[in-house]
Image 1 (cartoon, rainbow, N blue to C red):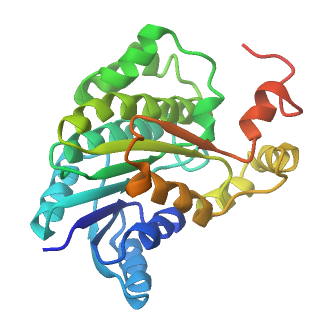
Image 2 (spheres, rainbow, N blue to C red; image 1 turned 30 degrees about the vertical axis):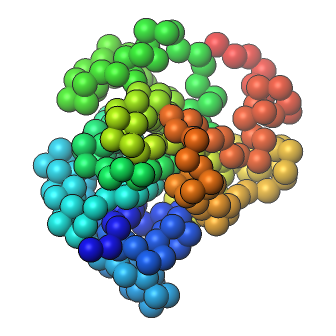
Amino acid sequence: MKEVIVVIGPGSIGQAIARRVGAGKQLLLADLRLENADAAAKTLSEAGFDVTATVVDVSSRTSVESLVAKATSLGAVHGVVHAAGVSPSQASPETILKVDLYGTALVLEAFGAVIAVGGSGVVIASQSGHRLPALTVEQSKALATTPVEDLLALPMLQPAEVKDTLHAYQLSKRGNSLRVMYEAVRWGERGARVNTISPGIIITPLAKDELSGPRGAGYRRMIDGCPVKRAGTPDEVANVAALLMGADGTFITGSDFLMDGGVTASYWFGSLAPEQRP
């Protein structure tokens, strides 16, 4: 049986990573909508990859466990790419926390129990997590280590504390990088590694939704005000993922790679800095 690479959320970034790490492997593409997974599978299959498509709802334990069962039926799971999620313009705070925070923790837990020796995972987080004001040590530990099914019950995640979609998204993405640090210890016990990538504005359909949405002006300001003066591409994210998942990345685990063209640097120390911070 071939080594299996699972790609959850095979959109522009997921497909770009699949192209870099999937040659000679069995790709399993999973999306909330089967038609999306099928479309991605057709594109990659026509490019010479061995692909299977299926459905997953990362906010459902039953669904994620079914995906794990499907993956292990195809062979040993050597790679997991988690690129699924919703943006601040696409969902309510409650849904963002359920999909982006809880869903990621669930995927890491479930696949961490089956990942093969020498395997690796990459979670796509966001630059947004780096613009969240500092959390307390206790809050950070809670996001990292709280049992998955108790995560959304944390006091800091209740509606009275998380009042808008951007805050929910920032908390989720900060939580992703913290959770990966925690899970890297457990994955390491199986001889596997896991890291996060926190991209800035990458031109994908999701980013285009944001650019045309209520935060579009802010997105354009970030592009114009960052040191490199442009948005990124899915292939640039895939370059980093290929390093992290490949032979040259075997000393890297539990890390978060911020790649945003310098937007975060400009936010904290340059022209993008808000006039007043909390």
